[in-house]
Length: 262
Image 1: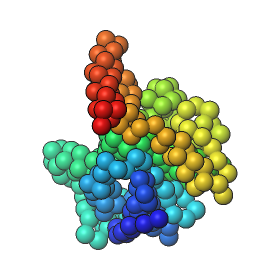
Image 2: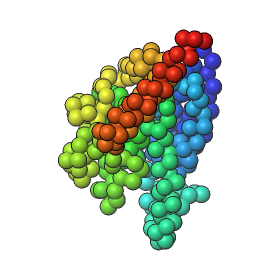
Image 3: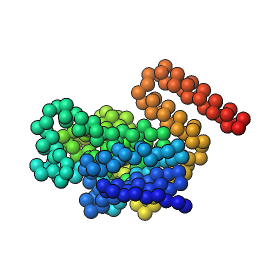
Image 4: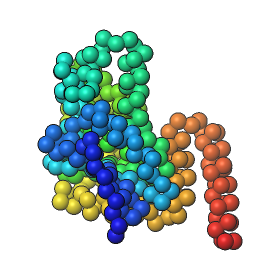
């Protein structure tokens, strides 16, 4: 199998057949995120061609992601990056632009036609939790621990995680998880609908590969249309969703006829 691989800014990207593998690859810091991480993640959609059916997100080492690099909360910050404490003295428009720019590293995982899957082991905290939530599906290892710790730092989740968490577990449970900052283990994550499945740590990669294969049996065009349709269902009124179904099916019938005649 031909594998194309690139790595910089702590993110490794590999293309294997019709699957794009994205790995947070800074295990010494437990894959803590920085603006450089976000810029790298935001650039990935340009690599997702029509041939890519799935994107699998993993973290190298003992933890999926420990969250934000805490140096961003120090006066010195990270070399070459603006500290969040320095940013706090900026105009509201500048703060808004800063956050909007880096939210783009999280929004595309649900917007891309490919199915996105986060395989989570160890800790997924704060920004790491939000990155996992950005994916269509989460597979949790038996030792996975999810936590939204922003509130304990006097902040709030701002990397697209609030609506995604509410959509998965409901308002009350999302409020309790975020306000307490507590850890959600793999069993609870599956039980409340946060994660799709749990797997033994040693079998996490294999379980994820099996899931990808099962999601790739149907024609690619139908799966892409289905993903878009189900995403719309989260926000559409019933009548609008019914119309979206009709439009999507009409497109699929045209494609099906073209395939059969070809």
